[in-house]
Image (cartoon, rainbow, N blue to C red; front, side, top):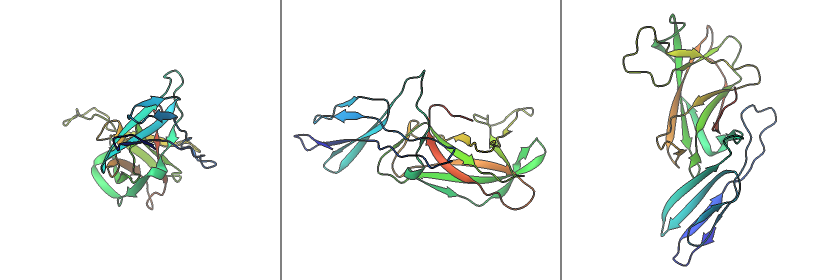
Length: 209
C-alpha cells in the first residue's frame, strides 16, 4: 500500500497460487505493478493486477490485464474469489436436444465475494460429468423470434480430463465487481437421476477445449 500526502491510498495486488493436482481448469499468476503516492500506476510485467484507491472511506478500483496477443496468458483460476450457487434442476419445455428431446435446466449464480473486482473475460468451467449425462448450452445472441431452422442448443460434453468453458456475460463488461453476481444456464439430457458435476471459474482471453 502506498500513502500519498493528501490521504489517498493505493495498493497493487495479485498473488499467485498453485493449481490443484489433476485440476483441468487453469493456472494462477500475478502481475507486477508499481503505484506511487500520486496514484500513478506503472505496469512492470505481464499478468493481472488490481489497484485499489481509497479516499476518506470512498473506494475505487483500476484493473490491469497485460499480455502479448501472440503469446496470451494461460487461464487463471479465480474460483476462490467467488461463490457458486446452483438452483434446482427443472424441465424446460422450450429447450430441446436434437430438436426433439426436452432438456432440463439448472441456473448457476456466480457472486464475487472478494473485496476487489475479478477481471474478465470470465468463464464457468464444467467437468466430471457422469456417463450417460449430456451437457447442452444455449447459443449466444439468439434473436427474440429465431427462425425455425436455427439451432438453439449445442451439445458440449467434455472429453475425459477436460472441461467445458461457458462464457459469462458480465454487467460491467470487463470485470465482476465486489458484491456483484452473474448467472449462466446449463442444460442436461439424461435418463435417470440428477446429474452431478464440478464447477469452477477462470479468467482467460482464450480457452482450451
